[in-house]
Amino acid sequence: MNFRTDLEYRNGGIVANNAGNADSRKELPKLTLSDRLQSGAWGDSILKELAKYDKDSDPAINSAVSIHKRLVETAKKFVKRREHQDPSVTQYIHLKKLNQDYTEALRSHEVSVKRAQGGLIDTQVNAISAFKDRLGFTDKHADEIRQRIYGLSPTDRSELLSQAVNSGDGNILSAVLDAHPMLTGLTNEQQNAYRNMAMNKHAPDLRAIEEQSEKLFNIVSDSYADLVSAKDAMTGKAILNDYQREAEAANSL
Figure 1 (tube, rainbow, N blue to C red):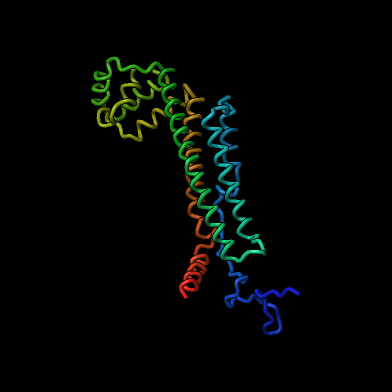
Figure 2: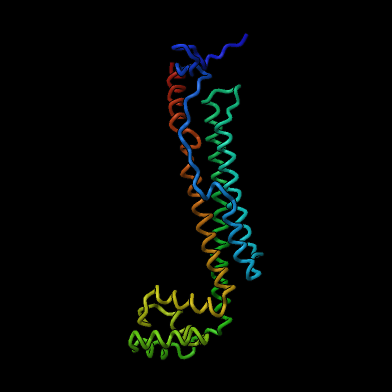
């Protein structure tokens, strides 16, 4: 007959026996996954937005979407593993193996995430470059244009740049958007605002690629950070540390 040494009869009921038995189990810490790690649909919404412009086949974007899904799958897999301990091993062995595998999973994902980040940055850069080509950006007379714009009143400057945006004047826009803000009398935020206005009007497809790539960059980056942050709770670090101290003390006798 087999006896459950992890249970005992106490005060009229059966309770867990945590008196140091090898097969006893301590309560695992509470674990709550972030919203980004609970659903792999975040990337799908990005592809849906890009599909409006027939731009949902970009390799870097699709690769990043897949990587996010794998991050979600990893989180869910380990949630199940931590709760389903093999009865033939102790909790110490269970958590030790869980920690080793989780560490390896993070290491593998780190490589994939960095690759995805690089691809998404390249995608954004290429979108902006294509926008400039589409509007015929040129540095011809750039210095003279900047001097003229710098000397205008804020109201006249705003009116001139609004006209340049509406007409898609690549000469004026290049002189303003490709220069340091202090040379044009604009702030960096104002430069970005005019660039976005011009992209939305003349290259909405490229603006969508840039915008959705940035959003996906943050989703992938933050999801990986969430996975890293969840490690201690996921693997029961405090409990594992207690077991390791007990093991070291026993081995030292």
